[in-house]
Length: 366
Image 1 (spheres, helix red, strand yellow):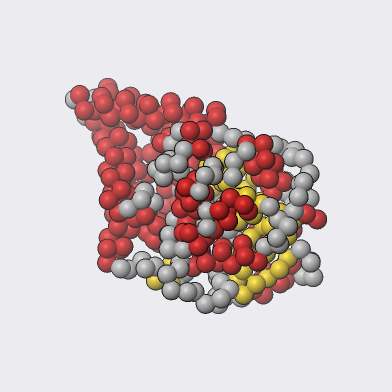
Image 2 (tube, rainbow, N blue to C red):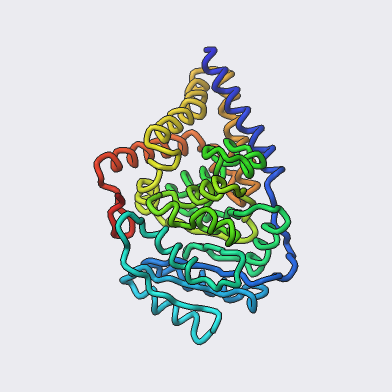
């Protein structure tokens, strides 16, 4: 039973590391100072008529709105997204709605949309804030993000939104997003490390200094990357910059998926690349299964070490949930099932990639 003890020890170490990271996680100010300079908020949308209204309304009520421009790019929507944007924006001069150009060869849709937005941003803006249409910001979110970027000295920050998960599938899988980087990534070291493996970001809410963005080559440098947010952070670091995830729990909330079917499709398109390569994704999924599934199975057969490993995993999930606004009960206790679901999604993604079957928003991913 010695291997079970080792795996249980790994689960316990992960829980301790998550607690340390939770304590060190950079937090934005609840009452940030006024914006010192203009900020461009950039919103790429494609078939988001159902969600863009709430997102845009929240952007229009930001503190310091007179120093915020909002640029929306409609990337070939067919569901009336552009009309929804116009209905909310009205005649507000702070909002500009652009029509996306045809996708060039060698680009994926979101990186190209983001690059067009960055090119269109007011030259006076020294901070670019990218926001997804399924994100709703708190009124102080943009000001707090700019203030945190200034106080931290980082070139790119990704305030991680609180993830709203409803239904069994999303509640099973979505909390693994925050849990993974809290458990596996040394956050403060990762901010300034040039190592690609020490990078985590979330394009749902991502702010970058314009100068650092341009030094890195912008989204053109990550034009073919499925996980473009993490790739952009790596490009910024490779160009001498710094950055990483910060606490966005009180700044934004995001409902990524409403059902298991939506979640499965979303994860399938990207998990194969989430850890650098299909082989890397498979290795991570296997390691997580060993550490977080084998001990509870051993506990069912009477192993004390297995029980300790399971409880350590639950504790780690609970730490992550409490720090990021998630559910502790009963979700944390289903952690082994969450890891198994993640493993299945990873295998599905790798297989679809090998077969050339990956698509997203009606486009085939090359």
